[in-house]
Length: 368
Ligand code: ATP
Image (cartoon, rainbow, N blue to C red):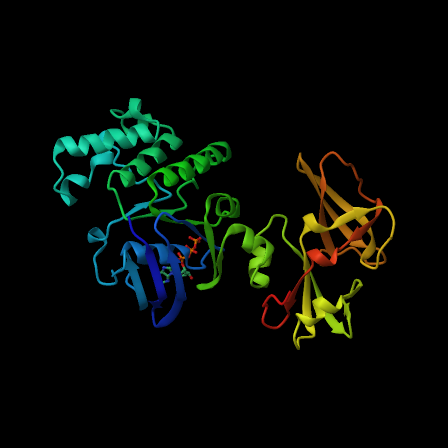
């Protein structure tokens, strides 16, 4: 067991003379036993980061340390890291037992008996002891994924590296495996870096989430911190479903003026803003309160455009009174699924000041 440190890690690819900065000066400390999820849009550098940790990709700059030891120049097979891929990468002609044991014979001095013991223990942990003599084509997708995990577990690694391991499973199995993987990681207690572009996985599985965009680390914090205190506009828009509502605003005195509404800020909020006057006001759909009458200065008349029933909640798309309906000026609110509203209905939307986020429009940085 060991901790893992990325210190100012950069990766530049040379693509026929074009320099592509895939990972840009990323620093993260992952504690022993911690579950870290690397998340971000396609092409943000997640897989490259994971591959550098595994030793499958050279580092252009910076340092990677595993258990305090710099591993930059240590080849993949000598790093005690176990990788699990989206494609399970099982050998079709081998049994589950052979697939799980594969590599152990070569890379360790364990006796056949010890290897067998580890394989059977892992199969037990994963709930597949009865499948141990089957071949991969006799297994379901979920069972194959368990075998791939088993192969990682038997190596008794210092770190688990997982690249979208659940991406090929259907939604129900995926949800089941999410919980199972968490339990397993908890039991084994090995530092884990898990790559996904699925934010539900990021939010539900991780101790901390590292959010990347264009190779740059945007925030590395607990899921709740990323949700409640996003560092910047990117994180605010990326975390949360449906996404945060954003309105460009200009601060005039103590009033934020947007194209749609004016919003008076308290002294306390204004004092946190510094010099910036070009701002973005953000509010999460779940923080927008829908009411029937205007009772406060932060209440705005709006018309329901579309209602999306999601079961336990309804996602309501609204347009401010007096606005033409365009994709740009729709905003969303979330309402308890038991309460009903209809398209065309006139309502009042309240944006409570305690739930409002303010960002510097130029830098994207969160100010409040
Ligand atoms: P996805 O979610 O789509 O898998 P990702 O976040 O894992 O994306 P990476 O695969 O790490 O992203 O890629 C990061 C950037 O580096 C992309 O712009 C990609 O095109 C580029 N890249 C990755 N591998 C190479 C390579 N071998 N040569 C040149 N560019 C590369």
